[in-house]
Amino acid sequence: METMKKMMGSEKYSSFAVPVDDLAEIRDATYFLREDGTFAFSEGYCHEPNRPPDERRLLSHIVFVPNRGNAPDYAYKNIFGADYENVTKPIMATQPLRLFYPLQLREYLKVDPSLDVPKPFYARYKVLVPVNTFVSHFPPRHSLRAIIERADSDPAAMSIAKVTEATAELLQIEPAQIGVSGSLSLGTYANPHDVDYVIYATVKEIRRIVKFIYKLTEEKEERKVFEFGKFWPLRFWERYGGEKIMVCPFFSYLDLDAAPLRNFSFEDCGPVVVEGVVCDDTHNCFNPTVLVLESAKINGKSYQGELKLILYHGGERGDYVEGDHLCANGHFGGVTTYGDGGSEVRERFGAVMVTNLEDVTKIV
Image (cartoon, rainbow, N blue to C red):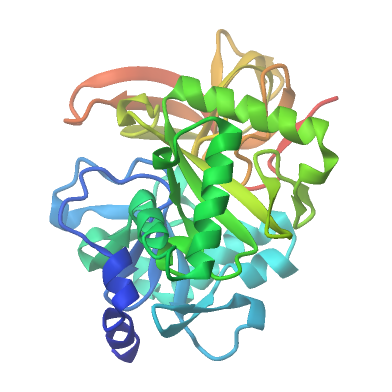
């Protein structure tokens, strides 16, 4: 197709794209190019690891599609010389947050009706995209290196390099620990409104960084980010060259074995209302977010022991911390986690799974 020819003929494409040869390690927040020209965005870490490679599917969102001619200007994007539109931005900009994920899914299935297949509960607002339809992918650290390598001859790339250096210094990490997601990872980095950084570190170091960001925005009002009617506690404003740039961090496990839901199953027992107090927020900034609740009640009845609350979406990363008293609408079920081979059971626990925005509220 014409779109693919344009992109693959671009010198920039060859610098950013990485062939899809071995996807044993699939991480959150990475773009994948499909053979039909659409771009899928990975969510979480569990992507059917036990299936044979030719049957495996990526749990994802379809974000960029070849331009259909009716998108608003703010949703238009030129990617590697080809015209694209972002199918999710108009929904986020015009619809209530609660409808965002359901309406996104409807758009995905318009783009590719073959993706309308049975899915586990935690994937209800996402699509399972066959891995054998991918042409290439765009690992975040690889993409950032591709941008920085252009800094000497490209002022826009130099701006990203300087903002990256400033962010690394602010967060007290090495620049090599940072990658980029979002449209920057696809080579569109001129005059960005925001920079989607992916930070790779140990769980301990990421907890330090998260607490630092909380303190930064608590003490400096001008650093806080409010967008789409929501305060984003892990985002903050940075300045470079007199311009404000929104820094939107994603966090990635340096050691994938530290990801609690890298390989798991969920036995759905149906909808419930859960109430409890967060007693462990170790994984509150990751996608999916895993919180441990104490003094929990399910449908008004006390739950014995600790209960995990899993937010299987990226819209509320970092929103909830230890001590928060929460009420959530979700589905209760049993979670079983497995080792790399898929046969070794690592852990079994009860959990409430939440898949939509605004299904969790704080009780004051």
